[in-house]
Image (tube, rainbow, N blue to C red; front, top):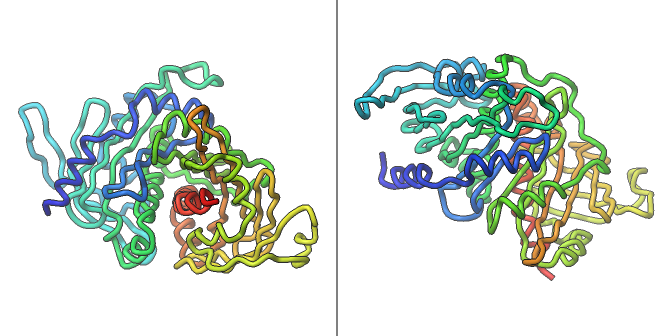
Length: 407
């Protein structure tokens, strides 16, 4: 393995974004949501990520599943091959398995080799060859000691956490092009892929290996969006340049919305004023040109709202359209265009007494309508509805924050 790869693996192995206790605490604060934490996504590599979800299963069962290579194939049907090819002893009482894998995805199958080593609370997956290498992920299951208020049997509740990094930049020409355009693309792609693994393993532990959300996809009403809960959690558990996100699902498993919070140094009222200026939003990836619309379509005749025509240029995703905007609080719906029905909201949660604020972008982008590639990806793996929305929202809010800070 190249020297830089060894260094990255060491960094991923020795740095934790949050303790198990903090993960449980922030999950309780977020309510019914999955948790995502990132170190500075625009900083130097490796871009580490942490994702966590509650599992309605005993912790022993969850640990048994994540330690079984065959379980990954059961949990994610898109795996064409997950095979143990060798075993080696690292110490008298410690061994690890060499696993080759192949994942079927649109455009080109992905394949590689990893080592799986059991730990006290889970396993380490060290990606050493092929796609996503070098990379390392810690998978851990902890008992949810406090449980949720709506559950009486707390013995059957666990928290599954996946933390680490992967080299997604070099997977193919598409990922290389995206990372060249924005350094934030690499952690964004990582969280999209890891989210699918997280939810698939959790679902298998709960006893439903092949079930995937199948109901119709739909965005909520703009008025239902709120980032206050996530912004408050970010102040408590994601200091500095770290990013905290919540992924919320409907009861049928489909995406409800994604909320991503980043810190800004400017006062909250200044950031809020800037949300009314179209020029700040040109910083969004793909928002190439914004013009103020008037009267067309009919939804834009309301004089109490704004309408922006957006011309986008994001590769592989069609995001052109007209957004109707309610200014305070800032909420928007695409009323005409490729992703008609998509919703977006912005909340600015002040930090007291230190100053600054948490900028929270909430959205359901209806990426299933954003062109052939997105539609095929979500059809092949329904959990990518959540993963791709998470990735897009992450890139957008990290890009938007500096523009909204400027006076």
